[in-house]
Image 1 (cartoon, one colour):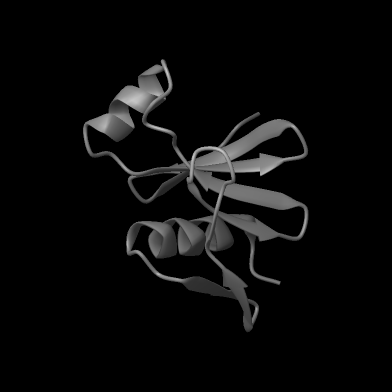
Image 2 (image 1 turned 180 degrees about the vertical axis):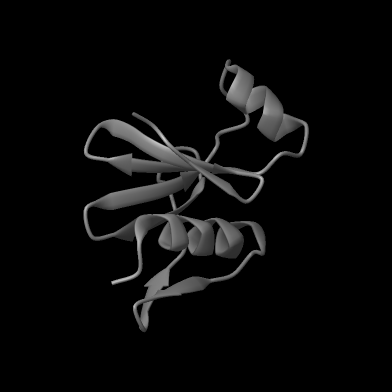
Amino acid sequence: MENLEEIAKSVHKAIFQEKKKVIIDGKDYPIERTSKKGLKCVYFDKYFFVEQNPDKDSHWAEKARNGEQITWVIQGNDYFANVHNGKFHKFD
């Protein structure tokens, strides 16, 4: 299995290049839309990858509204990491 940083960057790139799927470990994973807000997302193993909602009231949403590309890596109910403009950041 690829490491999480490589996977997150691949998902991030696919989301922002308007791809319909991303390939992880040789398997296709569809880029779906969340039911409520229509945000692009990918479910992989125990992780959920989702683009930043620009309609929120946060500094991250403001960055997204200003054209920055942000993908969140969520594990369970925890924000585990993000990819911000192509750079991976794991939270401690």
